Image (cartoon, rainbow, N blue to C red; front, top):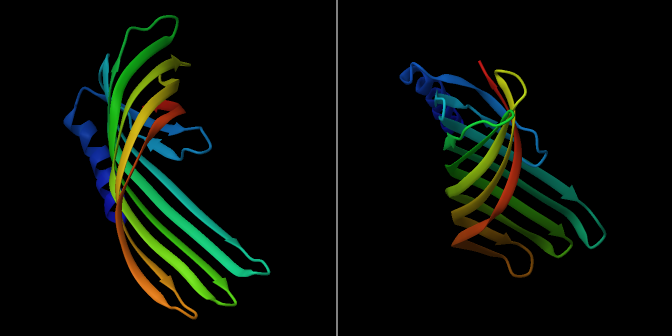
Length: 194
């Protein structure tokens, strides 16, 4: 994960140096379920690029009488690039359209302990996502905007995992598979250009 973050940061710094006449900034999603950071790069008045990174981490544990202990965790990161075309502004509102494409990596662990034994799984998922997007930019000031977006997304992941159990019938089974998902999503992004 450190390598991916390093490549993302280096790419975000070098893209503006390649496009000398461009403006760049930073954006964050203010939707609670979307922990994303964007690096918008304005190439001209109607075109901008936007590298992004999304991070999500989940940990949960519980205990009870039958199941003595249950723990699950998941770490996900998604890095990619968006390309957008900005249309003419009317009353401070500028519609735009484009698409994002990204690489997604997820690692999940689950373990359940009871008096009869332990069962658990470890899964690693890697793949890509693609999301055509439309949005409306509302300019608060010259360099600050609030943007409302709607997207249709398609995600395809290759999964590798191990399911383990102990007790009367211990097992250790390797699993492989492909997972696809699609749907719609909305987000609110605050962008600031330097």
